[in-house]
Image (cartoon, rainbow, N blue to C red):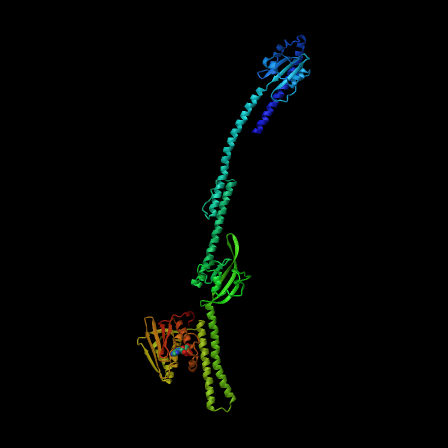
Length: 580
Ligand code: ADP
């Protein structure tokens, strides 16, 4: 507006001034030739007194009014006549006026824009001087200026109001965006931004909402994955502990806490972990710095801790704390006690089998060698050696057959023949079989079965094998002339109990817990005399258990033992699928 105002004012001023000169040129010189008319009049009237009426007839064309005056001056510049006597008497000597007094015309645009003047030399005798104060134009310009100023003010006001509302339409959605972003930062995804327009801000708001939904979905998916992992981590049977780079516990699962029990307290860290597992004295790298670096996972095997055997894997992990990544350590603790015990039992078993087989083999070989080397050996001695070979072969056959039985029971390969039979009659049959041997040792073999003993459903042959094993133990481990009692009664509607008691040598309390283990014998020396292998009770237990029954032994050293078998009336076999 200012720029336009300045241009406007300049144009008006220039136009006015140009119009002043061209108008006067036209009246005085070009068209009306007022100048020559005045000069002619001067010839007849050199005082200039008759000039005024001529001039007055041209006032209209000269534009004489309140702001433009016309003066007649003599050749010395003294005022003769004019439209304003007062002003005419004190006319300032402008450049144009001086030029006219000096004999030429003063029709140039003055340097000052305060006025416009025009001076014409009339034949060297007088000067016609027209001066315009330009007040009319100035008042016009001031009106123009006022209009421009008012327009400026109105425009300014309008611009302020408009920009206020315009800025609000931009800032309001942006502040809503900012607000929503703050909610987002605090994990609150429920604040959707209202999309009020279809412009860029509207598009930005819509995109923000979409981004928020996508972010929420991603975070939900990540959190689901995390909770799945946490569940796996929590219920993992292996203990897992993650340590920070300065040895603090970062994560620990239930299995690890349970493993360390009371030793796992608030101060638990990598150093205490190493100390508890006696790994701190190790020469390995991990003992030197709180957080060692493993190029690949390291395993510490067979670590003994509180009666357990552990395998521990060490590895590095990267975790984020305070927006920076650190390298920590993760330990996975496998409790291999069961596997370890199993392996130990397997090794012992192989050692026992080898030992048990070697003893009869050595005897057989010794006897055979003696017979071969002494061809003229006495018949009785040869018979003794041959008997020995036979006995030891039988013993070996017995061991192998027991081992096969156990192996079949272990592998669930036993083909059970479940039949319904009379238990009292079966027990009677077993005692008859054992009776021969018992009589040889002068034992009293007493049988006491309930008359109401029910029939049972079981594998008769195998249950009889159990009874034979137990009864032959009673015969073997009771000094000659002992008393053996077999009794059987129904315990409830679903069980029968068979017990075999003797007044033999008994079993020391320490051995009782192990008596059903394979190859377990109380005293090797006392067994070798009696030819035991340590497999009889183990087989008995397997068979009874497979029938869903229980077997136990009570014994007092030097006084005797009682073996009790509890059997269900109907066997429920654990490997019934194999039943024939
Ligand atoms: P074995 O073939 O050596 O008799 P068992 O498994 O039948 O094997 O018995 C294991 C051990 O239990 C025997 O070596 C014996 O020391 C002890 N034992 C079993 N029954 C009796 C019993 N009635 N009296 C004393 N000791 C017994």
